[in-house]
Image (cartoon, rainbow, N blue to C red; front, side):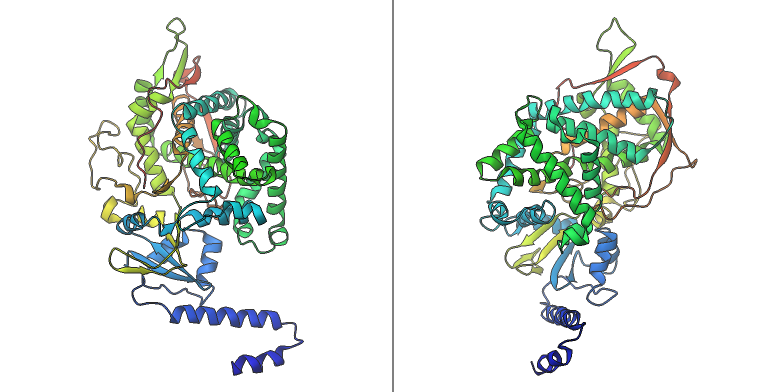
Length: 535
């Protein structure tokens, strides 16, 4: 007390007063939190730079930073002091199971509200409506999430798939049969997925039909790191902030012009709008909250599509095996009198193409940088050993858990397309298993139960539709002459699958074996969901 009483008069009138007081205050908080750590808590890992080290690591590297820090301790869960906040990082599937058993105490819901405020810009009464009404539940945010789920199953899912495929087909033809032979693979994936997904969700008044609106969304999405800090975002993240506001304007105009009433607007979009309207949300706040829907539909699907192409086409044996599987089990001739017309049946990919689906899940395992997050509502002991303190934050690091040799075997760091299905083989060779059978709690690609990605089957259908058509009709080679791993964009904080941070130029060549064939997609409806492993 005497120290601060003496210090403040000395600094009074000095231009460094505010900075000095802030630094001292933060240092006191840092030392206080560190000193008060309970020995029953997960072990603390100190930053390389006192106080700010972990913050800088997350700012510049995103959630992959957790994998670097995790290597410094053998504990299955560890603690970080992040600017005075207790942060627990789970690195073992065993602890994931313990987290799931305490779902009411360890809740995702507060972060839905935080995202609505920091990402979407909802404030005041609108934000209060969204907040959870009790620990682990309640609130309009949760109502909206629950309203979304039925429309992403059964007939609602198949209708969205059909709309999406109708849009993808011509875009594929334009690429394969068009004059361009060189493209930026990631940018092409972005354009195709944006067009097809947004049409499937929003219908004929789709705001993404505007090039300006599309560019606004992607600039905002790719520069979320500073905006999420929520420190005068109109100044510190000026362009991203402006892009967000213009995008919200476009979504509000969509609502006011009757976009939700169009017959081709999806059940998903209408269900979310109805839940918000019935809950008392304004049209403007509804437009803001739909930023989260667009991010959910697009942010991970685009990089996942890129990495799926990358992992298949960079492995000749795998490419050949998947091509054979598709030709045998997923390609149909709808009209026997027109043998030159063939269709890829998405329903047959779901049920009869285990290698493609297994390779897709392996791609997600190796490239996922997600870290499902929970708020600790009250003190709780995990696995009869680790104390988590009330008011702390917990994250489950997908890159660390996905490389855990206890569950994935000694080859955990390697791509194995047969890992998720021991009955498939590549190049006629018998599949061998040096790894153990995947278990749900060791797989975080779709989040962690009970908060799984509700759109995972729609996203999977879209990604594998693109993959199947490219595999059947094209050969893809990098302009550089070899497949190389691109730099990643760590600023895209909404994406659990880190997108490339640089162009990836490739050459597209139509296969001679399929010359003269007209292609399309169908959904026979035999099975509406993929057999996906979920955490």
